[in-house]
Each structure stands twice: as C-alpha cells, then as structure tokens.
Length: 335
Image 1 (spheres, rainbow, N blue to C red):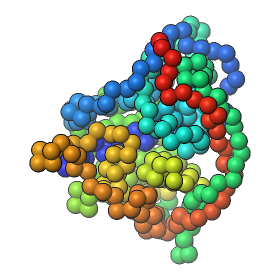
Image 2 (tube, rainbow, N blue to C red; image 1 turned 45 degrees about the horizontal axis):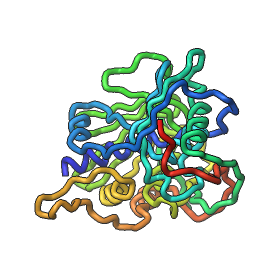
Image 3 (cartoon, rainbow, N blue to C red; image 1 turned 60 degrees about the vertical axis):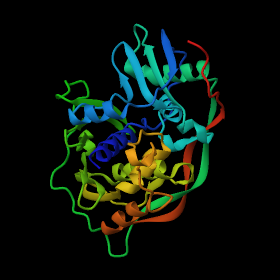
C-alpha cells in the first residue's frame, strides 16, 4: 500500500498539470528551431517511487525555460490542450488521444519568449501529426455545481491568498507548472503530500488518509471557480469520454475552506485506464493488484464529499467552447 500511495500522489500531480490556460492561442507562424518527437517509454515505477521518497517532483509533463520546451510522458490530447490554451476536457477527438504519450524536446528560437511556445507547439502538431482542428460553441450536458437546500456548509477563509512572482526563484524541491488559470508552484514531500500554491487563487494540499483509504484534498481558501476546475479535472479523468465538465453555478464569491475525500480504489482504477504503471504481486503471476473502482464513473466519492460541503452536483446543460479535431495522425513524421 505504501507504493500505491506514491503512485496515486504522482497521478494527482499529473491531473494538475494536464490543463493549459483557457482562451485561444495567438495566430502565428512561429516555430521551434529544432524538435524531436518520440513515443514515450513506460514510466519506471521504481524510479517514480524513489523520486517521491526523496521529495523530488517526477519529471512528467511540460517544462519551459528561456531556450527549450520539454514535454515528458505527455498525452497527445494534453499537448493539443497546451497548444490551443484550452482545458483538457474541451478537446473533442478520437478516444485514443489520451492513450498516446510522447516525449518532445524543442529548441525555442532566439527572440521568442515563453508566451510564444503555445503557437510553436501548434505548428509542431500540424507539421508532425498533421493536426487539423476548429473551434465550436456547443451545448453539452454538464454537471452544475449548485448550493444545496440547506445552504453552503463551508467556512469562508479568514485571510486572502497572495499572488507570487512567477519569475522569482523556486524553493528547494519546488516545480512551477502552468495551470488552467495561470502558473502554480507544486512541491511533493517525502510522505507523498503535495502542496500546490496557486498564488491569489489559494493553496491546495493533497495527502493520503490511511485510516479511511482516501485521498484528501484540502484548502484554507480557494474560489469556487478554482474548486470547480479541480472537480472537472478529476471527474473527466476518472470517467474519460463518458464524464462531464463541472460548471460553477453556485453564485458564491470569495475564498472558502474545502475538504474533499476521494476513494483510493477509484483513483487506482483511473491510473489503470490512463496507463500509469501498477505494482504487481508475486502471487498474481505478474498481474497488477489495483482494486476495482466502486463506481465505473469513479465519481461517487466526489459526489458524497461535495454534499458534505452543502453543495450538489446536478445534471444541467451549458454552452461550452470545444476544439474539434478534424484530422490527426497517431504516428508523427520522422525527426
């Protein structure tokens, strides 16, 4: 179970890093100087566990500096979301987009900045994967986050979270990633506790509760839009193509304390479907020992936790911006 806890912690980190800022990427002919694209090798479970034990962030996802953009073990739909500056669940395309993972190392041309990287990634996807896509405003079934009959049971935050300078030095063991609404700084402790500092949007802490066999997500102050984004990320990943986006319909403003419990069984089932490496039992003949989810959609524990906060997820409809994939190749052209 100790190994399972570390895998789950790394998985949630991947959930945080899987989106990009909302809005359309700039129209530009910018392109990387040089880029190598390779199918990602499976993650090494032993190395992943060792990194987490040492308090090192796993080298997964997007890393950008002044001269290079690197994408490690990144799903193809995540690359598209980053390129078009959209959330992962806004991408409409074939199911295999979430099953194909790639490692990309690209050189940023002189004179370009980090802000130009999405446009350059768009150009790379069009050239190497033959990506063709268009935006569409579509009405979809969603889950509306609303206030329950008894009113909200959350406490408002006594303090207002403060923004951080994204160009300031990172603390030891800290990593900066681009969240859907801006940069955030993430740090993982040796006990697999994850602290995500979202600046003015608040700080979220994630840890394993061994007694209840849950993954606990808490915050001393977060906006409802930030909380809704977190719910969407979890539910869309857990249920895949059959899940629905969560839309904030509470009307609540300000910062609130949250406490969410998600069953480890559901998270581990999600890890299996997303291709995360699973530990094997010697007596199982090499088969993984991941428990089955209590609910195929993986959302039952989330629904219950939300209700304890005086909120409710209910069926609704909303017009959402989608990026519709018209054409894309599974195999990129050669380097």
